[in-house]
Length: 169
Image 1 (cartoon, rainbow, N blue to C red):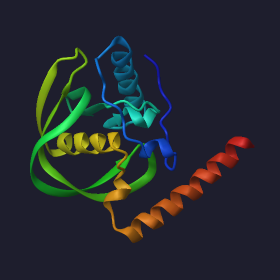
Image 2 (image 1 turned 45 degrees about the horizontal axis):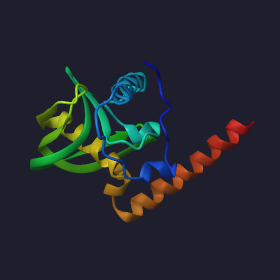
Image 3 (image 1 turned 135 degrees about the vertical axis):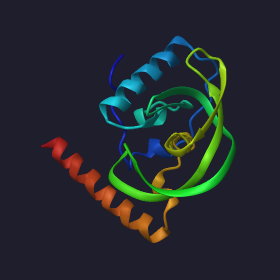
Image 4 (image 1 turned 30 degrees about the vertical axis):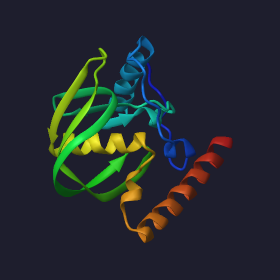
């Protein structure tokens, strides 16, 4: 296993739609393991492959005692709505209120390539929805008002420029 670098906004790869996984190969299984290690090292509760620069529909989520690694996850049902504050590893120091389904049913392939269906609620449901959004190039800043999004993106672009300058020094 190895740590992977997490891509930070405004990198354009975060806006790309990820490709379906044809089969859960050894390469995909290794990606899942690396993503779990990277997520834990970053103290996150979820990570999508696009966040480590791989445009494949793969996510990992670790909430409480539930650790999931899924290829081709899709939401096939949901119920209720709840608004909560969310952060994101690719949007450092950004927290925004996001409305999500309270409960979801998610279908995907596990690390063995077997189809699984997960009934999730609470933080697990929220994390699954958040990571699945990433696979379609959707970020939490897309779920806020236009004014707040403009303020956040301006701040994030400025910080990205400062990081780039600091790297060159």
